[in-house]
Length: 213
Image (cartoon, rainbow, N blue to C red; front, side, top):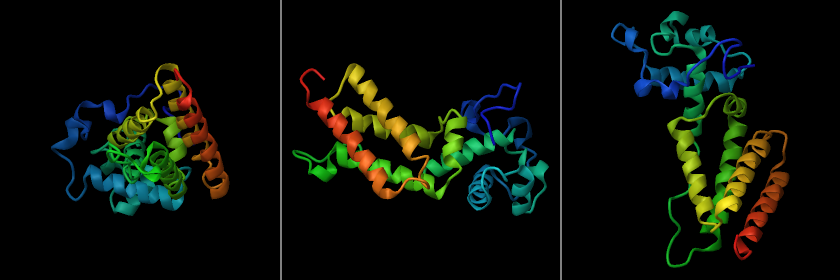
């Protein structure tokens, strides 16, 4: 199983590397026919087909028709590549629009409806890519698509009217729900997931309706 870093080693997220680019010391001499985008896409497909436990740079290279060492012209480590694949998968998730319609928003378009759509979309994503959940737990998850997802969630919670500790608690509850129930997407029925989501939303609505919340 992949962990955030190999035992005894310290690593920096690929998203904290300058420019997020391929290793500068090798970029000018990189072999033709490959680029980081193509390698990342192939990584996603291999993870979908064979799972995280069977993933290796050798298997990836074989699928691309290159040597394993060729991949290191574009990434420093396997962990960097898995971080890139994680964010690529998160980019498939449809995000709710930034603002509700005015002057009044239909129930389906209110924050609760948009939160429901976001949660169900996230669950589908994890069902389609079972390797995303363990990587989300293993890595910082600070790529551009991960940050866009969190920003969308923050906007939805802003629309609840909650503030202070209640707002923080709501964010924690939703995040834990998504990573918990969502991570168990293949073991939790759609009906059970929908019921749990109803309870979560009802709790936020009840808290938002209280004076001073």
